[in-house]
Image 1: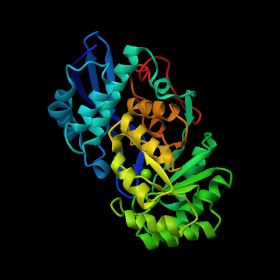
Image 2: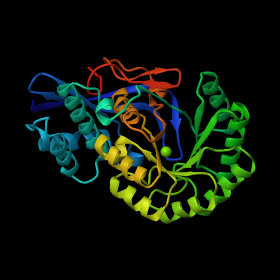
Image 3: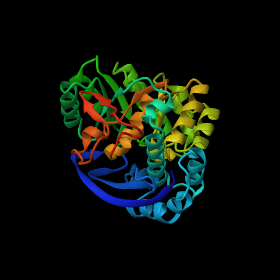
Length: 354
Ligand SMILES: [Mg+2]
């Protein structure tokens, strides 16, 4: 089967409530939906949200990258040469990782549909669901405590809290959330680059001394500051997770060499798709670094691809695939569903969409 043509659609879905981090405020989720058509009539689905604050990409840059560079590089190729197609996607242009991720997942979807297996099975997986945490946006301590309590009541057993704007107030935010949810719920903290290295050490030690017991802290310092990240990792007891510092396999190599982080947050939109995600995971595994699978505020198509990745191999520590619960339901056939706090893979081959 050859990849015959592609079509691209933009869509938007309201969020249930505003999503606020140290980097941005999101009220409505926008996506590119990519369909790759095989010459046998099959369709591979991909998707990407514009996350300009993180990847530098916008709706029009994603669409332009797909139409002008990535699409032309792979149209006409045979789906049996999966790795060669993925090389073409990677090599089509520098960066533009979300556009590449959309193409990578659509190609994987076609591949799974053509050869007849769900992608998680192809990756080597034995499970068909994964537990997700849910994110509490950066607001006042009281509002954050209330929101966390609401999620706990809905059955979430791991809550991720956004901080990184005023470290003293951040400690108060965590205090309020911990007081509301009690000691049993796992508490993950994401500073989204909001602290300076020494400020991060001081703040994380204060959280440790207060007994708030964070499971880990994500990206405390600026993305480019690998030295600073290592400084924090070396000076606190709490595990430190790299997120914005980790896009490509090359970034993973640098972070591993520098021993800059204890954990990795892999997102398809940062690394350019499922193949690079698997490469990074394999590199991390070789060094004994555990990985979480994360997401942007993205479509159920993207969450479905991430869930196949999460269910498809051992050594995935956690899943942060909460976009499925942050946005209003989308209307298309298939994809993952949410049962309590578990993201459940669909039946069907490839991604299980369409
Ligand atoms: Mg993060």
